[in-house]
Image (cartoon, rainbow, N blue to C red; front, side):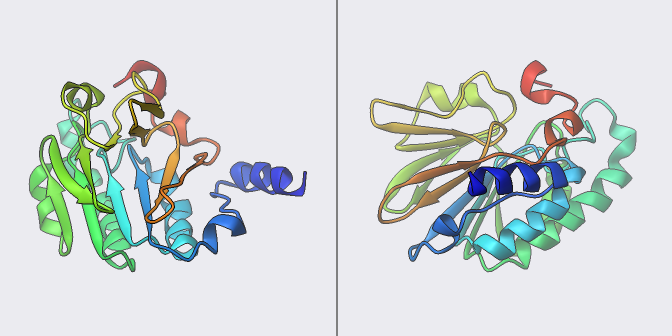
Length: 206
């Protein structure tokens, strides 16, 4: 009951509650997020410090409340906020950083602020914890040729799931944490107001 109360409290206050059972895991951890509006940035910075992930995957739309594909005149504002979240990522303790460009991202600016991050412009495969992983902003590209682990965002046409021993992780639905040795997956809710700031992307797939 106490844990549930803390989860609700953190959520309403705009932060991510990470239970001690996750923070104290003594193995490498992967953090996956996607489609992040500015309202989430403060919580994300705190999450990075509490969790100290070894690998971070962001599956696109870094400043999701700025719909850059539709409003190209907002590029200066996008760059201002992009630098903020990129600084968080680049200064984290993560040894591996992967960013999939979304439809509301600017490729040139992603490369401009990436120092140790790997920028993925389209569907790609990497090795994660001795297993094959597929990374894409778009769910439909994942299902065409899935891997052992599949990371994506953009909309909720495909949710978190396990099919034929393949794990599908949607970074819009939840903040996803994966452990190396025990292969456990944890799902944490985004703070209150995140989806609204995405302009209801989770429902309409902008």
